[in-house]
Image (cartoon, rainbow, N blue to C red; front, side, top):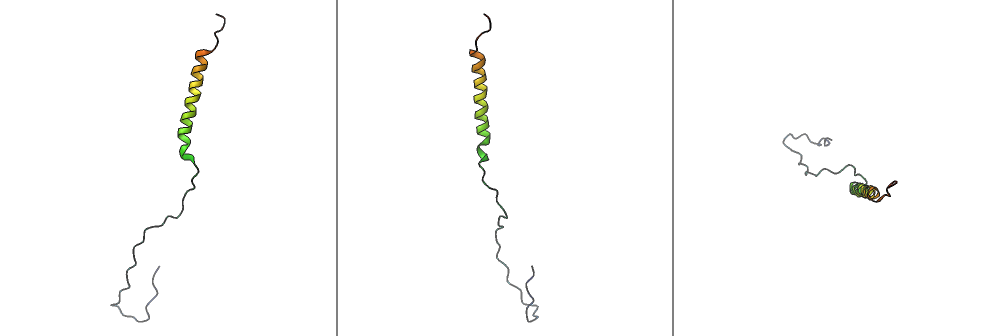
Length: 64
């Protein structure tokens, strides 16, 4: 973007400097709640593993 030409051609006139602006975010991701997925999977895995251990430990013996 270039500023429009001045009506008078004075080479000693310097255009004012623009104030520095912080860059603005162009887009943002939606918050979907997936930040709790890993702890939920870990808890579910622990419950399944615990159930398998209890099942194998207390299952009825075959033919004794």
